[in-house]
Amino acid sequence: MSEVIVRSICAEFDVEIVPANVFPQPGQTRAVATMCQILAKYGESHFRLVMTTLSETRDNNALIDQTSLWAVSDLIRACPEWVEQRTSEWLEWWDRIPLGPIMATINQLRGFSHQRHALAGAIYYRLTAFAQERLASQDTAGSIKAKVPEIRTRLYARGDKALEIGQKLIAARSQVPHGEWLPWLRDTARISYPAAKRYMRLAREAAGA
Image (cartoon, rainbow, N blue to C red):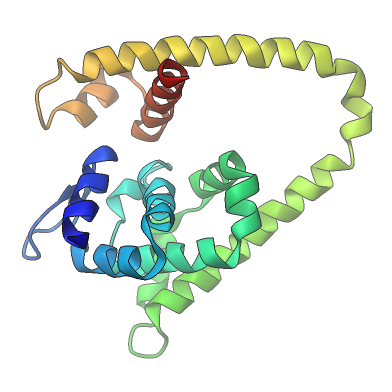
């Protein structure tokens, strides 16, 4: 039953589960057993957060494996205030984390250090640095107080534009042949996969409101 749920959630995130003997391409994973374990241990809501973190941030949908899944799961449980109260920032921070190079470096410790824990520790170091940057930026909030109306106007305009982009992407998604969505985004729409996912999610949320 858990594998059925895992496959359904992966499909929602446009992540394809491939056989264990197939090398995963971006948007693919063969770590279905790990996903089932995380789902069974921590529940569907937690598993969705893990998938959101990896599949909807820059270049990380190519790195969904046993080690990264467990490391992200550990960090979500260790940092609930970041994930639940500042979800957008959480995803922005993961956009900035060079997960691939970190995983390659951690792999050099294989046989000496637990990969899952080493990866979680390395990423946690980056996340705490981002959190400190945020606190430092809050100290300057008073200096821009007079600009709040202008900033809000820009944000609203940006939100309207994002909604329009999301609606167009949803319409295009239904017409692009299976397997050609990522190339179409890159070559025709000239937009990153994580950004497209966010625009489409915004449009779906607005439609369901």
